Picture 1 (cartoon, rainbow, N blue to C red):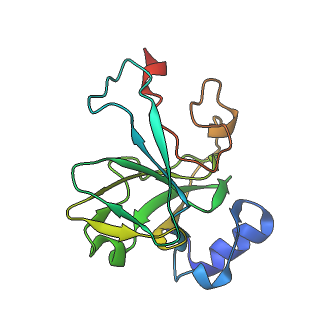
Picture 2: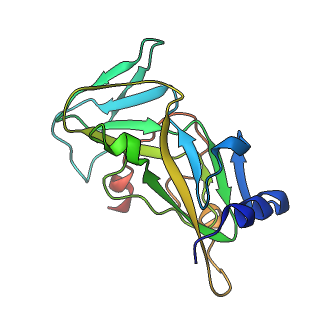
Length: 177
């Protein structure tokens, strides 16, 4: 079951969902709009290796925006820090962003109960497009969880993306080997 706007607000008031900063105008009928942070990154090497730590090069989006180019994977980050303690957050792109040919995630649209951080975006585009820090980039949709949760993400030993950050985080797949 997807949470409605009223249920999202109730969950924020009870502390079961945290969104910082929270702007009520960003609350939709059954979602919350998130915005592109000012930090992007690209991988240092053109060839990536899943068994190795692939380093990234940071990019700050200037006031006049930044042009994304096809064929490059950009890691972005949401302005919003979120916590979810009783529901599963899903991050989806906004239709207006999709109509510009921008994808905001390759595979990782689902968060875990207990995820407490900003969201790293896996951004790609089909043609050159200028983006701006602070622009609406996606929306969070919350699904209720049935049953008791035993293994919250933020309490899991070895959770790879628990360190609070305002910058995009590269793949930590190499830690699995």
